Image (tube, rainbow, N blue to C red; front, side, top):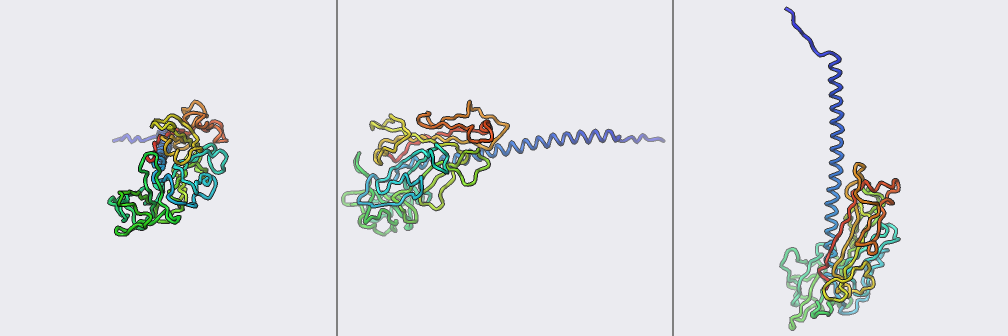
Length: 368
């Protein structure tokens, strides 16, 4: 009896192995593309999340501009210490009454993205400590009347005390006693120092604002926002871009990096110059306004930030019509950034980044 015991020939095995090799190669390329695409998408999502957090901090600080900031000092305040290095020291207001908002353009300052704006916000609420934003009414000689766990100050917290304005057009006044403008929060049964006590017979009311656990060098907190060039370039960012920083003057942990891959930031202000409650003028320079005028005229702050999401992607092509992008409401109120000049290796490199212009419209809630 004969059996037919045919198997696979060598040629058939070679053809099978070749086909398997082709399939595996194609699968490997597909997997590589999937992994690369996933990394790109993850980078975009991460960048969007970080940008959202940073921009929300900026929005919140601008919204609080002027919160806890007095219009006048009760007695002479000879000096208070703000910034000590350039360009931040150019915005120092000492010994005058501080401005809630200041701003200028860093046209030729080394270490900063050129033609990008520098924004200064003053308020006890813009600090990074646990007491930032905390406040209470003082209606008696005893200063501890907090009943909200989110607003309670402790006996270790320094605070400033302000007599609010009582009539329209009047001044809010920072209580200063012997040159001292900040005192420690007293315990529940402790009296405030005499000069910081409201006149309870007349129903007077003072406001206390938290300043932190260390003695402040100024009667407010100050946050500077700017686009700086990091000491070590971020390999994921286009050359020529920088980082949006928040620098709290006097905070040893500052500056705080909020947003990477930023090409420019511009700030404009909408003013109510005739005081009818409706903005009637848009400007990009308020350097000529004093502290009180800023409080009564600035109704809106618009911030424009040009940045890209994710990393360079040669499989992507920007939808921008040209490399010239206007940052701001117009060229005259903002600036024009030529993206082609950022990466000197190629005049077309800018096309492979996902550029986006963010716009924040903020109405400061503590200005008059």
